[in-house]
Length: 536
Image (cartoon, rainbow, N blue to C red; front, top):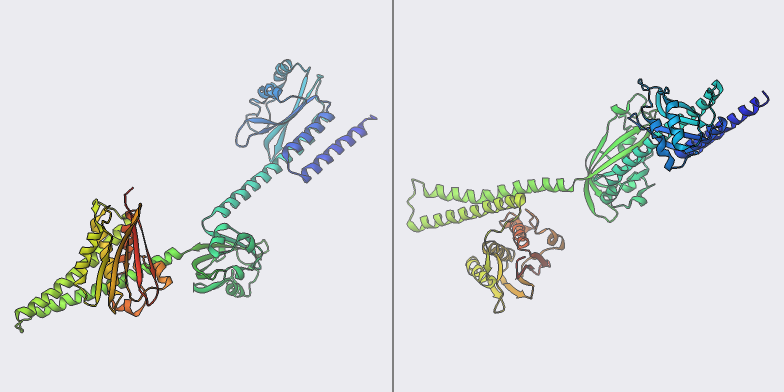
């Protein structure tokens, strides 16, 4: 009886030490080892094990051991087989002693008794605490009580550690989704200060993520123009997300019932460049109904805007370019078939020539549109590869196009002999015709147009130089885009769909070459394309 108070003091001290360990750190294995040492000390055990149940199964795995080597742990495996009772909420302890006898013989450690208690959490067995002793005897109620106190502590530690692990894994999963999302994601606090800023958001807004942290929203998202919705600052001032200024704390709104905000427009980036984006803002409230965070999801819609602009341009260009030849064909045909007029043969021939020319123009327009559509869907395909004499091809183009102008002098400059290249002659003729026709079209004052050829060991280069209106630097970078036309008075007066240079670039690149332009406003342009001497 003299030892009982000391025994209770030791038990209390152990439990306090375990509690402190559980609250100071969440390393489960260390907490389990501490619990095992305390239980073995209190029950005079020589060997101890804590086996945890694998989540979602009936199997157990040793997570902490005392008094046995790592090699010897495999001998305890039979002890863990079929350990759960049929109802899944207790242990099948009837054959533990039999298993212990076999285990003791294998270990040769003189163990005579095993005390086992399930580690229960919310009615489910999360593990088992085993203490092995060298003497045989009935486990007293005091033994069971001591062991149960440690088993309860172990169950709590396991539960907390698994909760922590689940939360940690979810945090890592969400962080991975956030960091590697193709869309820009930004998290703001209730005052609009940036708390999180992923890499995609940095690329969209032009900010380094680490520099954006701590910045005000309006410093990072600076709208040049808003096409849809209103700025975040404005709607917050008007009472968003509740949509009522007098309900600033959203106390009568559920999270699911809150309205998101969508804003679309042109964002001005720190380098003064513009990008078209759409941003969706989603509010997050705390339990009191106050605005805690705002989750912003941004998407680059530049390609969408360009597609819409291309569609609009296509409709405008096609309607304009189709209208003129169709009107001329209809006009001349209607005039020639009038019953009240007696046309002389020369007038009839002139009218038919106009109809034929406009029909050819209409055919060319349709062929370009079909080629552009096919190129967009399938890419450029070269089907008639053979030897091409570019100097002779240029000569024939000059002869054909010189008849269309009296103000221009078309001249070629090729060294002799000029190398033969492998290519699609029909496609390359289209490139040359387009470049020369453009040089004529955009040199309204006339002048000399020189088509020059050069070569080296790897490539041949063809250039078409004029002395026309030239291009600005901005136009140089976009002149090969589909449907792009320079926005000036001359372009508006001249015919064209903006497809010629787009198709020319596709042909040259399909041959493994490159095409470019050097120009200066008022001083003409020099279009150059380079082809490999041998196709790879």
